Amino acid sequence: MTQQLTETAAEHTTPEQPARRGPGRPRHTDVEPRSYEAVLELFGQHGWSGLTLDAVATHAGIGKSSIYLRWKTKRELLLDAVRDFENRHVSPADEGQPLREYLVEYAVARGRLLLGVHGPTMLNIVSAAMANPDDFQEIREESISQGILPVVGRIERAVAEGELPEDVDGGQLLDMIEGALVFHLLISPRGASREELGADLARYAASLVDNALQAAGARSS
Image (cartoon, rainbow, N blue to C red; front, side, top):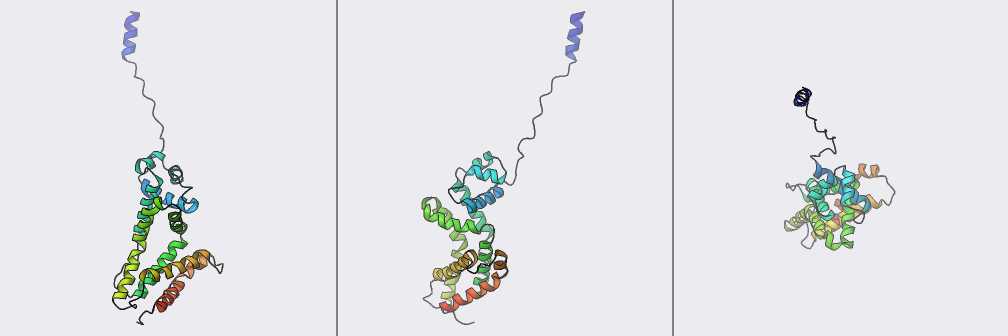
């Protein structure tokens, strides 16, 4: 009798439920944009030697495995981030406007970039390429091809169409504009604040382009 009751009770015993797992680390569907933003910020703040994939994961607030599944090295991640950044900050569309207007638009956009959060990142690419040429050759080429070559091409077309003298070097003319922007906005010899520089950017860019074109012997419009 006792054995029968025991067997009946065992048949009606509810099976033990497996323990429910905790929520763990949440999944992120925006791993790539968060990683790109983090690597650009860290590179701008700490340079090449201070950049690690682990630091990117921590700064982005995502799991390290999510980083390592996509990128094997910090160079691969930075290259992808630069490509994405340059694609989102392309040169002005060449829609037939005169060279002066095109260059003023470019100078204003470039100035906003230099004054923005990733301005130091873009400058660090140049300095890091000099110190680590093997690591940065492809990264620097990507930045140049997306951000600078289209502008040089527009200047060279202006030479071919007679807007500029035949002996004008497109790269050298762009050097004048780029160099002046970097010096004016980042070195700030007059001690102007970032806000003051931003408010004056459109006027400065127009004046800078006018002076550069005049020095190059541009044809009067």
